[in-house]
Length: 179
Image 1 (cartoon, helix red, strand yellow):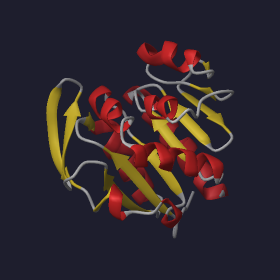
Image 2 (cartoon, one colour):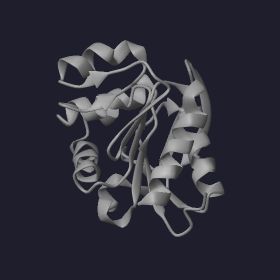
Image 3 (tube, helix red, strand yellow):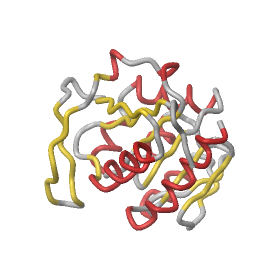
Image 4 (tube, one colour):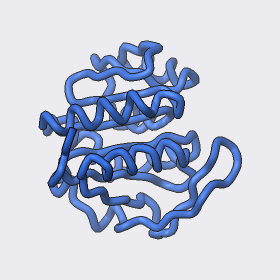
């Protein structure tokens, strides 16, 4: 399935889960998308995590303050508890989530990253999944949580954890190819 010509933003703070960043990045590139890594920090230098251990360092393409959601056809939010906890506190990150949901552009969110949706007040009435430890946050915010590898609700794609990345990537590419 080709998504040639589509532009995708991967939005991260520091200490994101490396697999949830690298595998969607590679799948999107392999399918023909142009991918931009956007940092929600004050630096383009980013640190990934492999669960609780430091992973590889990455360099973002641009800072969130210099990016516009209208320039992208889809948005990916990798997980990692530290990344998601910091990202949810960034006003612009929450605004991007709402912008993508409202514009019916694919929004792909995995693991702990649904915390950003909770903080953006964007889960009420939505069906989604996440890492099991944030189920209560989603339910308390009005979302319908389900324990499935991938849940697609309109343009929102959610997934639980790194083991679900093949299904997550396939759902993202399928939805992006239809957009």
